[in-house]
Each structure stands twice: as C-alpha cells, then as structure tokens.
Length: 216
Image (cartoon, rainbow, N blue to C red; front, top):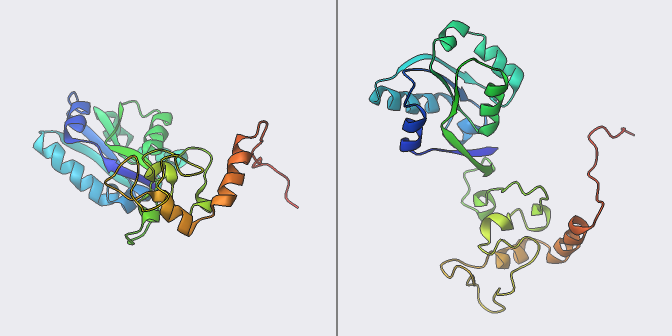
C-alpha cells in the first residue's frame, strides 16, 4: 500500500483559509489501511471543519481515489453540491489528488495527507514492515531480506554497508543511538547478490522490460 499520514493542523487550516463550503472524497483503499482514509478520515476532517466554522456540502468514500474513471463517477454523483463548494478535499495519497485534478472539478483540489512511501499491511513489529519504500526506482529488497536500506540506513547506502560500518559490534557509525541495519540485512539477505545487482543497475544502456512484450 501507499502509506499516508495527516498533514499538520496548521497546514490544513492554512489550505482551507478561504473556503467556507467543503466537499470531501476519502480513499477506502490504501489510506483506509493507514487509518487516515475511509469513513474515519472523513470524521476526523469533519471535526476540524466544525471547529473552524466551515460547512461540509458533500462527502463520499471511494475505493481507489487514484483511478480517474472512478473519481469521475464519484464527482458526477452530485455535481451541483461540488460546484457550490469552495474546495474539494481529497483524503488520499498524492495519486488521488492528481486523479481529482485531472477530472477538472471546477473547484480547487486540496490535499490533507502526505504520502511517505510504500508499506505492507501487517500488525507485526518488524523492521521489514517499518522500513518505508523511498521509491528510488531500482528496488533491492529481494536481496536485503525485505528491508529498504535507503529508509533504514542513516548513511543512505543502498548496495553495501558504509565504510564506517563496524566490523565488531552492532552500533551504527552515523547514528550511535541505533544498531547498524546492515548487520540485520547480512543475516536476512544476500550481500554477494546485492553487489551483482549494483553492477547491473550501474551498467550503461540497461533497458527495462516493456509492458507490451509479446507473451509466449
């Protein structure tokens, strides 16, 4: 899923400072899984809007705000109410906000959540679940035991431990308050294969597989 977190109250209030009538569309997929979207997201936002003396004229929960066709259908449910709005608030990741903008609702489209990367749906307290994907474009988690090194390593090393990585002990050389994540990656992953992957990623002229490749 795409992980989202609420923006600060101050930022949301600033974004809505010139809006009195608000329409809200909340994502019932990834954002709901993060506890920011779905009906819960609408309730949280409505509480703030009441506090600020604003009127909510339309609300809906959409499974997949990132799908433009679905967003367009949702906007068509009550176009009069939306056109009377001063702002359309999308409670989803940035993709949902972009989807609404592409639909041209005729009113300003505002975001109240920040997208912070890809995460997994789980209740486990594990470093694999905690390491949020940074969207680097060349994923290495196959060989790091599922741990995103760019997310967890303060040195931001991706293919191997930093030069200061301790040979003995586990203390991180960059942030002494945490353990060196590469010690855990070495246990769970494959550092030899990771070095081979680095060479592939760095090679010139590497072409990605086309999604239109012919099936056998």
